[in-house]
Length: 343
Ligand code: GGG
Image 1 (cartoon, rainbow, N blue to C red):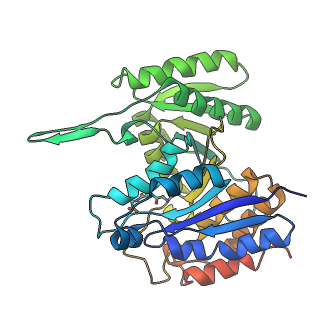
Image 2 (cartoon, rainbow, N blue to C red):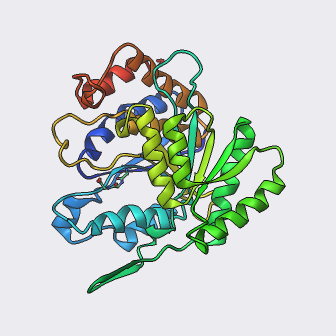
């Protein structure tokens, strides 16, 4: 029998609660197949902040860190909080505080059929770079600091080398070491060291601007792409555009060194899309595929593959939400997918 897994659900803002609602029956389904889960719904987000003045209180963070195994996250971002303070104090706090260094963003065609020609997996460092939130705005001058540390860079690159090795595909490091000599110099040195230790992996570095051009011209030769937080964010969004857009892009973040009990967080790549919220216009596919990634991370490989398969079959049969040119609501799209889950 599997061990009990405690999962915290944080739907967040905007379309987050709507796409998270489509996950709940999938968690029930996983339990119906013998996986023991304890699910907790947590309210942190813009509404809670505006009501209580709290973003993610320290006790709540510690409870998530030490009392849960995994987090399923929706999205944060709300126009009523224009400085995005709550988003930083919730999502970036979780990524950084739990040391979720590796953010994995797969991009492959979704409809079922022959082997995908495009099969890119972006490994994005998730806790550092310019997203460390250190900087200042002064009259006529603004500073955003980018911090890169050797342990985080090494952890991210080790995960990318491991994955490229097991897939037998090329590994590309995106960098701008010609300009960002210090930070990306560290990335290059660590990459070279790991390249020597992994002679079986066809690994090379590429200037990020040239990489973006090559991706737009032909993404099919690429396999695993590793990048810092900022470049990884941009590259993975571009790649999402090759396979249906932001609404279908999943992600999962984990701490390979497992410093705390809670070492994994799955969330769609998309943000809160406030203009779509409350209208049934959001596509739940990114959230559902992120849930499948979590199932796989927790060792439920069969159920992960079945959920991914259900998405593929539903899309191949013509199920389409508005972003994909169809008319299905968020809930109808979720139902069309779940109809293909094995009982
Ligand atoms: N699930 C990713 C997420 O919520 N990211 C935060 C974000 O991008 N917020 C800004 C926005 O929603 O536009």
